[in-house]
Image 1 (cartoon, one colour):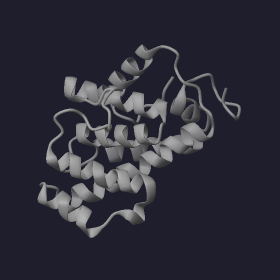
Image 2: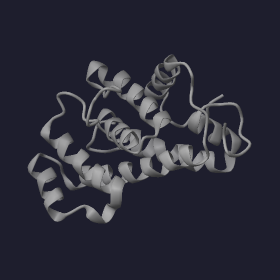
Image 3: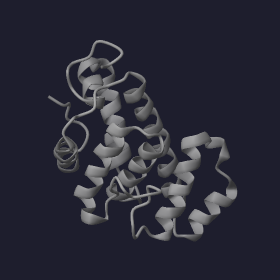
Image 4: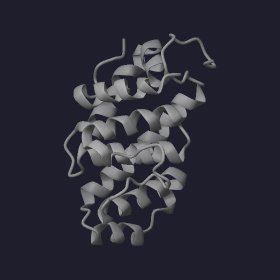
Length: 177
């Protein structure tokens, strides 16, 4: 049961529909971060968002973005049993970027020059590191927004697959119905 009066929709959808004054900027932010120009692929950015959401224990965002990642990358996307949240077969660059994302998730000030150098040594450029930090920080905000207002979770696991498929195909600018 949500903590405030919201439309009967799950997760972020209820907040976007219930508060259209913030829906536009938030969906534009998501679209820019997850689909805009970046040296990171949309799949890599979805994996970072899924990783942060799992580590923050935000079920709605973790399951939604894992489904998007699976749609974008097939079986290599992170599943609910990914253990440390790193998808099997993640390359060294993605592993180094997820280590930075983890530090941002806990306390951005804990990212060190050594973390950045490890990411560079694994093939990340400055823009990839920048985008990782920004995606991780934004997902912390989205996770706290969804969970802080007690939004509803879908009962049907297929909801995440359908929703993830729509986001993978259409992006983030369309408001949920």
